[in-house]
Amino acid sequence: MSQKLHNLLTTSLVLSEQFQTTLDTTPPTQNNTTAADGAQTADPLIILSNSAKSLRAQVTKLSLLAITAPFTPSAISTCLASVNDSVMPSMVTAALLLTPGEYTKAFSTEARILVKTGLKEFAILVQEITNTAEKLDPSFPSKSGESSKDAENKKKELSKQEKDVITSQTGRVWDVCDTITTLVSQGVVGHVAKRVQQWHDLVKDAISELEEWDPEDEDDGGFEELMGSDGDDDESNTENEDDDDDEKDVEALQTQKKSLLRALKPIAQIYPAIVTNRVKKGGLTANNPQQIAKLESLTANLQSIPDHVDEAAGSLYEHNLDDCVKYLKLAKTTAEKTIDLVVFPLGEQQQEDRFTVWSRTWRKVMGDVISDVQK
Image (cartoon, rainbow, N blue to C red; front, side, top):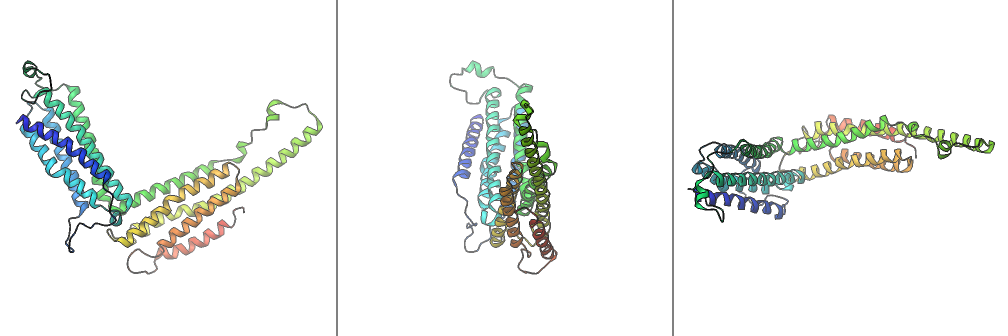
């Protein structure tokens, strides 16, 4: 029986490595082409969720069996056989079936990363169980150079520290399994909504930072002021002229700051509006290639806006008003393209709704505030 356990542990490690390589080297297909002649295939989301739950359950058993005396190779072998024969292949298959064309590139990539992480953490746990078997099981195949007397003197039970190592690693596998289950429960819609909220937070953070910025705080005097002056009248006149120029610069920055804030706030508003009216309630259907393609364009635009906003604010901090206007216009143009993509619901019927009406008002407001920005 111990030889069987040894073989299963080795197989687990080999399979984990092979499956990780498969996930790394298999390019994602645009659509799921595994179904032949229109035959229905099982939902990969269900497969992924069920296999993650199964892996969580099996590693729970494995850890308890490993740390509880007496050490029982047969029970551990049963758990490992289930993971090797069913759980790991199912997880990898599901990840490969979640194609970008049907589930978005971001969702497909996230699923692959999580499954690969799960395999890696499981392999670490398997190695710890292998170490445990070598310490506790007298009939477990001995390491090279180990005498029969050494085998007879093997421990009866793990120390608390050794048990904690296994328990801790089991927790890491749990975490990955729980994250996979959460990803599946969110689905494409929930995953997109979560990412959009993250980008919205970035825009809000940039606005908050800009609101707190005061151009006057940066006027810390020139080199001459720090070193002192000889009190020459010509120098005094020059300093007065410089002070006047500084005041004008600060005034220009204050004006630009107010105009920039007025323009950025409506840009930030498109995020919750799109999530509420289009991502969650806009007729979005998973596995619809046309809608998924539009969703890819939508998320690409929403992801790029925070970068433009940061560049606009950063240019203002550096007193570069021209670049500030340039990046603000980029943010505005990208926001308008985003609105155009989803001006109507994502479903088959292209009918106006509340969001369509709101988008017209938004355009008018955006046109008014952008005209106030210094050119």
